[in-house]
Length: 631
Image (cartoon, rainbow, N blue to C red; front, side, top):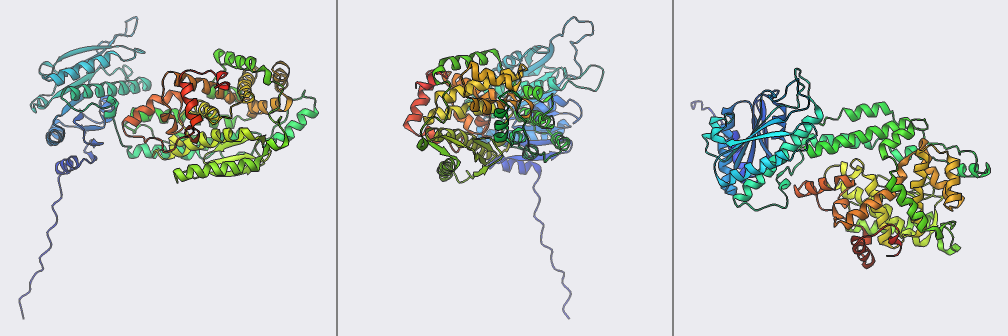
């Protein structure tokens, strides 16, 4: 019997150390995110800098968040752990880029300049230091200039500069590495003196400002060291969404998709209400009926505010989602207050008042188009007036053109009996009222409005990777409608009657917000501004829906804003990336420069025609709404 032999166990593959993993990822140009004991290493992509914070997770929370807002950062509790990672990271990045700089961020333990008996808010301490060398000194100068430029809404910064070797706050272990080093220390002015409470707005402002200043410093250092200069220093920011952003985005989309705000507040009995109003000799207000609500508002608000926004690590995205959260809250409140006295005030909060300049512009339009008054929008012969089926056919043709350019353009059409005459976009659906009748020459223009802007930006926004760009950033509707009206102009179907309607909507909103009744507003439009009765009724149905909604003032407001933007040399492409407001234009440019957003996949078809291109160039030289009728 042969001796028993023991089978040799296969050798386990030696597990890589964290340092080996990091270096391998950097050499391969990959990202890296690892949770550490009480901290984290995050490298969005290899960049020739690293932002560092050393300390307990619950200690200097703003310094920690400033560091974590960067594309590359290291959070650790102990200096020994930091050194163990900084050395190989710096070596790998120097090998890759030929340069490297480290930024160490922390806070002072207390706000030393603040005293109880001061008659005003004193400046707050900011200390900056840098190691020797031309690039580090340039970075220090850029950092100082950025900090001194902070908006002085609360307290202004008092900046002290020194050499790193003379800075008592600099960690000797970091100096011993002989790496280019910048340090930032600031007073914890976000804390309420004598308590654990904080000032949330001031906290966010500090994070955003110090992040921006740090990026400027990195850009200045790298520029001085011969690194290729990006289009903007903000390009050194994040280029990838972390899981917390995607979770917040899905949560926000789930809430937004649980209701359709405009359908919820739009009457379903428009035809019957018109007949009733007419039978009562235009004296009694019409009775509007609405869809029964299929959601529990309180439940959706609980879902909305259960979405965590405190771990997004990106101040720009945090602001976008916080604003959207507040807007959805207001929309849900409006739905809950439908047909109640307070509805109009919540609507004013959502869409704003009719400002004097807008009202003046509306009157100028009506005065300048008085010859078009009393002319019905359906004044042509029978062969020139088309119905909902013709509109549906032309809409399918236009949608097919977009689908052939991008197969993700997957829109649907619904013919509906429960919406007023006309067209309406809801998500990916184009809703066409069966009562729709319009002049043939207006069809392509209105489809350019609804399909070429509203649906196009929905699908372009869907392609961005975050759903918030398809449901719309907060306040997007004004610019969206301005773009859509401008698309009518580019398509060649912008008429005096259409412009008068947009101006009259502003007048109607102003009357409603001032307390005028439906009948009083109707008489003003018919008797003072020469609108025919049915057109005036349809206009006021939109203004008085739900109890009074000032939304329709945004069309002319948005158009004026867009014309001003174009005259100032502004680009259109960021507006096609998704549904955004004018106030988010710079945000979209930054996110695009950082690589977080793609160029728009589709652009409106009306921009592909000679007429459309010529009219766009004409608008860049300066147009008013009235001069659009002559272009």
